[in-house]
Amino acid sequence: MEITFKNTDDAVIAMLCGELDEFTAEHVRLSLDTILTDMSAVGSAKLILDFGGVTFMDSTGIGVLLARYNKFAKNGIAIEIKNATGHIDRILKMSGIYQIMPRLAV
Image 1 (spheres, rainbow, N blue to C red):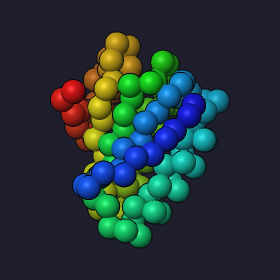
Image 2 (cartoon, rainbow, N blue to C red):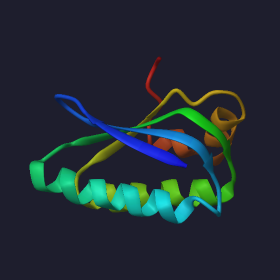
Image 3 (cartoon, one colour):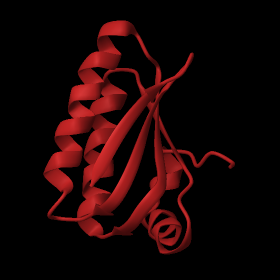
Image 4 (tube, rainbow, N blue to C red):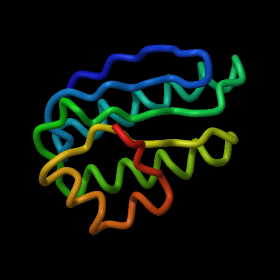
């Protein structure tokens, strides 16, 4: 899993590329925790997770998302999701993730 970050005027975009599973979960956790520290320091209010490059995700990925949601919410930072397609989109819908992390229109 590769994660690149891009700053915009009102958000940080995390572009995810690869598989989000038990083998990559720790890398994703650490990367998002690092950006949380940076965002808190500068007062950013929103993180957008771009799933356009995610090719696979399992239940471990759902756990990572839920844990990061709680951590970011405690710091007043919203998380939104964009570009989730196919089976990734179905997993996010079935898990209820979109109820706490809105899906952005493409």
